[in-house]
Image 1 (cartoon, rainbow, N blue to C red):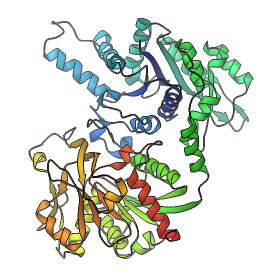
Image 2 (tube, rainbow, N blue to C red):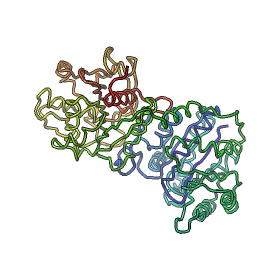
Image 3 (cartoon, rainbow, N blue to C red):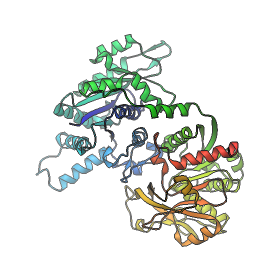
Image 4 (cartoon, rainbow, N blue to C red):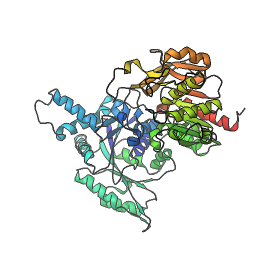
Length: 538
């Protein structure tokens, strides 16, 4: 039988349930278990696809085209296993499913209620991955904080689920906070006690407590927490602040979190965990031989989580190059012709980030013109690639006023235009071109040298595309369309012939970069940035 682990949070949000879940999953995976993680989000949106990045950080997209919470990115980066639609469930989807069934008459005229109908639908979604036969252990992270009104149906569903399958088949890990009061000079356990008491009121006794703390918790504090929260002292786990999220699996290993979990689930330890590759990655990450400064030009830079997968991809690529990548966030609205050299001149590479809408577009175009003319390595993702196409049209092909029809639907030169199948779409949610699509790469191009093969698959999230009406003009002028979708002719990759590194992708390569498999586009971009700074090493 598949075993289930539920991770709840208490005291405050942003304690790192996603990182703890991913770290535990990594440890269990390293002991030979097939593990997956799912996230239950309590908001009423069907998915995060229509949420502003300032609201919820980036929208992560899976191979099967699900728009999901950014925590799924952590799951994939740690486990190197793709997630799917079944790995992210929102309250909106739960209620939508129940209401659809009510409209179909499936409840036979019964009054539809939170209990049992909503909780039954939650439990059904909890079981989907476990019943697939692909996994030994399913870790389910519950979004929000215990005590939130919106989280109550999930907590009740966990209580019922645990009772139905038995205590050795489902356990609850509660992540909580042990704050340090500087004035008193001591750690305080009372918030944790209150959080556990609230869980108990809902009928759930946590099996393991993971305590986030800035200072190490001694044996006396562990004993106190164990006594007042009804857990074994060995089930009080310290989660101290780490210099990088990639340290957390090793910190949890030191705290025996994986052993404690397997003991409670009555599963064998399977010897010692195999973490050699992970430790090798950490060794290269922490001992770089060089460093580069790369500018990330975007319009949501006040919230770095809006570009979470990009920044993590730079960490993976940096380690692969034994190079420390310092990412400098630059707001595209603050860039113009007069200050672009001051903003970008000191950088060793520039990435123009994805996004939607016209705000900040002109700054992105000015940035691209500067790096193109000054041979600074450039990488454009989705809208960043489209901006490179627009800039080239205006300044090289001399198409005055060239633009994307997203920004200017009356442009004389709509070099970026809405995809044909998108023109009749009216609903915004879940209707973009989403998920993994094939791309054929032309031999002899920069893209081919990067990937080392002619056929790839990358994940997409867009409505607009390169307008193939102008294809020949671009290729003739030196902007090569080196990657093409074999089924639709959609331009996937553009590059410049006579430039050290100038590459744009219509897709989102950052969504496929993991610790075990850093994405080649990021690896080669960081390598190009290092060559720009240090010169090409023989």
